[in-house]
Amino acid sequence: MDMEPTSAVRMQAMRDPANPAAYESLLQSWWNGDRLAAARQGLRRHILAPNDPRGLANALSCLNVLDRASSIPNWIPRAPEAVPPAKRFDVDLPPLVDVYHRLLEETNRRRTEAWTPSSIEVSKFSIPLTVEHLANFRRSEVSSGTQTVPDCPIDFARLDFSTFYPDVTEADLKVWRPILSTTRGGLFRRLHKAVAEDPKNTPLSRTLNVADALILDDDRFGARVFDIPGIGTVTAKSLQSTYYACRLSGLVPENGSVLEVGGGFGAAASRLLRIRPDVVYMLTDLPVNLILTYAYLRSHFGEQVYGAFEGPIRPPEGCRVIVIPPWRLGEFKGRASVVFNSMSFQHMDARNHRFYGDVMRHFQARKLYHLNREVISPGDKTVHIPASRYSFNDQFKIVREMVFDDRWVETVAERKTDAG
Image 1: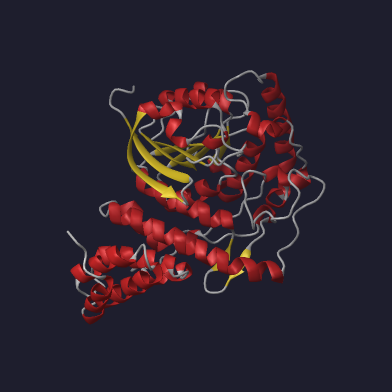
Image 2: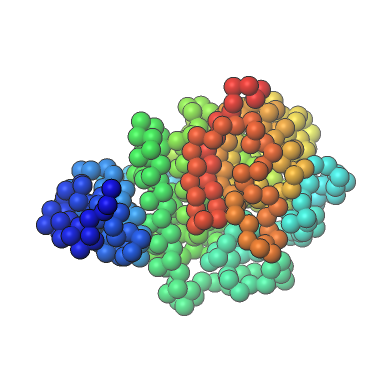
């Protein structure tokens, strides 16, 4: 069917902007030719017909096109609510440094095993750690790989352990406040999309109300926080981990469990556990990240965090968090409602993927949720295998995928009935 001339479609939409047919026709006629005009009309239509859910979703996309993503949270109907405040427990750091060195020695003794670092992360065989570095790990390259700019200064030398990241300056704030505000808007847009696709999921629906509380960060372990008027102190990591925690909240059943592979330093775990006190969270990673994770989560939850580093694996009664080296996963008798990974499967090679595929079977994982690189740019040496080709994919059936920036893919998958 021939499409009406663009000028006629535009006039029709201007005369009756709340008319769904006029709006849809305008989008078809204009979106590729003049995205800004289509976006403006999309916002106008939503204002005049605010009760149309699809219109709201389109309006959020329009705000993104118009470089107004930072205002997206103001357009989403919600009732912001507080969450239990982040607690602070003292953590005895010197013994943890000793544990780290023993774990590192164990890693080097096991260099031929399938879980050990791929060529991309070979530096993880030898990262130094002192009490001072652990106390300020969010300002140190010991946390490299778990933080991005601006939490890590953009011009800081990679794997330079001789100094710590500098304080945030007024010049930093001028540059990064609008960028982080836009990132927050994108977070809310993606959460709104997820809620719209699964409106009966009560835990996920609630996340739009608690996200503003979860994105707040503090200076524990030396974080470079950015104060944004009207929002509070945030970091790039707090924004990212809030999104993951909110998504996980909609995926984990009541009294369920999460196994995070590559736990970073526990930022997502700390947020999920604040809004889902019924969940047990297990994390595994390479030695330096294990210690960062353990220290960070102990500072939030105290004795509820158990480190299964050495000796018998016997989590105490009331344990909510278990931090466990990858070589001990086979000893653990737990089950995982969801296996979660953010941006580290992409650093692994085929032998690593086979190892964690076996782990998923051992833990009888019911769901897999991850965000990793799908498109590998020419000459990119930070990714081994595209996400669609991970060997453990054959255990699962994809139920939802979302593409990010044409390079990343967010995947939610459920175990096939015949996959064990």
